[in-house]
Image 1 (spheres, rainbow, N blue to C red):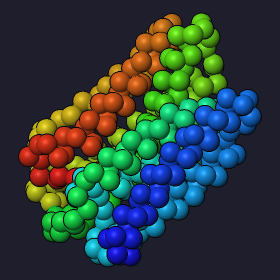
Image 2: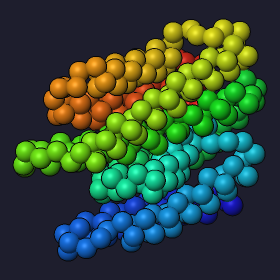
Image 3: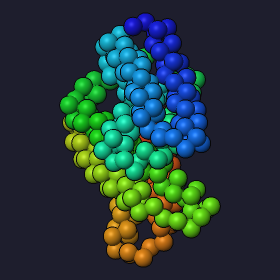
Length: 266
């Protein structure tokens, strides 16, 4: 696939997010089930993203890991895929589809503003532990997104009425717990890769530091959830949304603003 065809496919996918969002809002306002149509349309967008990622991978003979455009493109694919699977397995996550799709649309628009010129991967990136590190990281973000979106929806609903959807609340904490497991494995795989690449497991550079802070925040929140059963639900939901914001800043901001040796990656 040529670069022009790749960009056209990406534009079509971003347009698809807008269509899915409008479809979602329209069906919900009509009081009709939205998920069958939304999941079907989102699957078509996923096909377009798969074509864009695969085309770029084959053309450049390397994974989309290094530049900001690569990272945004690959995350659009992984976030969409993980959300579709998670919402299929945990139906309570379907309620926040409009928030998820809206976020993906913004991410897609951002990707279109970035340069698509590829940069050769350093030799240190040719390591199976990097693949495990990246995969775990994308699973983490993919699970964290619906958890945060559902928590945000619960917050918005609580502002209008004092109600608590127990099924949605349970889905938030289940998804965040799975995200924490993926984050933990990401740190372990990343440390092993770093030792192979640079001869050290941890250097406390800005990316590693903020990644650890994100992990620590999730660990403390999950611990508080288990320990303090009477913790106000609004505090918990707000913390989940805040943690997702921190994760996005950590994985999509700091690697490109810092002097960390492993720029991009996620």
